[in-house]
Length: 289
Image (cartoon, rainbow, N blue to C red; front, side, top):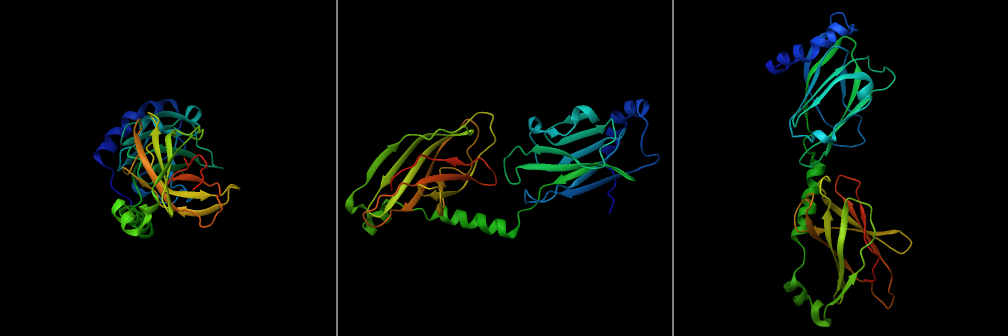
């Protein structure tokens, strides 16, 4: 159902559209100006929602969460758009040339809080009879499976062992050994400042001090992949960090606990820290458990 245009959009449209109306012939003789809402998909592989735009008409995108203006990218911005303005809550577009009919132009912008979904991707398509004059962009509410998965991760963090449990289980009878490992080289925004391995009778604990470069997007751990010397994934392990998010310019400690192999063998393993809802994964230095 078509929504009524808000007063702000009605006031804005004449201001941003008058100059182009004189200089550019409009493709639509009498278009319908529509105000509507769209909900962002929670899957990065889902098709991008479409937004209809036309030369000489402004399209106002209003976001229900703060966006990062510096992260905005619009395909063919210089070639096809007379106006692209962005604030922390709004993007205003006015095409100068007709949008291509064979493929959409993608608009991408990141959210300021780093929560999922971290980015909004919209497909700009040419309008035929209706122009999206005002679009309210709503983040997808978290699905039940996503909430259940997050709850399980939180439970796993709450069940992390402590010295009392270790002592009662007999783990400390053989003592605790410590080894400082060299940091693995990485070109990622997330850097490993220090990596240590602590060993008890049956367990090994890998701790790392992570640093995030200033100006980078916030980073949150998802899980750790344990690999053997050939790169084969052996197990997927929970991780614990002294905070939910690693913010730009911050340093935090992260730990991964695993069982030591039984028997006389001393395999060489490595851990890969996987970013939650992202692709900035981090390979740690190999170690002997």
